[in-house]
Image (cartoon, rainbow, N blue to C red; front, side, top):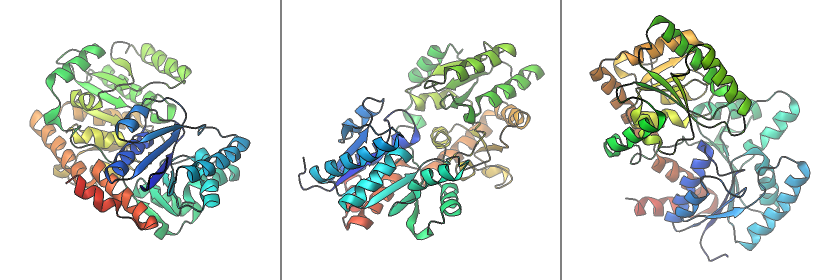
Length: 402
């Protein structure tokens, strides 16, 4: 019930794995640290619901994932009532279907409305563009990268002064390589069935076609044919989330190329810091633009070099030639859907001398700590709330966290 604290309501379809969902948890923690009240509306369950509660937030079960127009209208009425009952001061939407309900509710309740534009949504027709446009209708629109900000302006002609770029962040402590014990790494390798001395090529992404797992398997096959793969293995860390046919397709692809023992399907991995610490190189093989790509900064934070496709936001997080000289690079950028160029980058990453690999990794970690931390995301998001509400949550949070 209302208790006089500044109450921020975030709404998202589900609290499962993903960058948007993690940002919900991180911002809920910041709100409560600043003395506010954090409400999160989502479908019941979800891996991260307990994380919200552990951060001091309150999870309210809500049918937030429905795209049915009648349900969206009904949700808007329910949300407006709930906002009044709970003394909500601001509504923050993070996905399109619930954003329509949130927009209508915010206007009805005369509350500030914030959106975070998390994805480079496909727009194949005018109806789809109109549906997506709700994410550009916030009083403040948070873009998770410079790439996303340009996309919003180009598509919807949103005034730049209404857009705030807040990159996703990584927990610098949790992803500190000095804090990741060898026992955690060994346990993870054992669970994968990977030998202690076998290099790991890691892709951390849900199994969906646009993430490019098929291209990566083709690249691994090229290395294998040339004898350049040696004893390295590819670990696909991510579950299918219902796309069982695609997973079966990937398994058949690997088997057809004679790579059954070299391509491991790890499913959802809880200990991602240890996963990146166990890897020789991390790969983002997306064939469509990443609006941000959190795994690039998570890998770099533990000093793991990164190979990413050069579309979307990865050029903001991965420093690579020719944009920077070789002595400043933190990884490699390659064209999407190009297994040959990806294989070439993998071959170089796998043969880097230990000293050079350590230097690449250390530069990556410095780049992350300077530009992409959870604390920065939290402070800048609270500053958006302060701007709309006239509060001082950002200052309170900063003083409470040192």
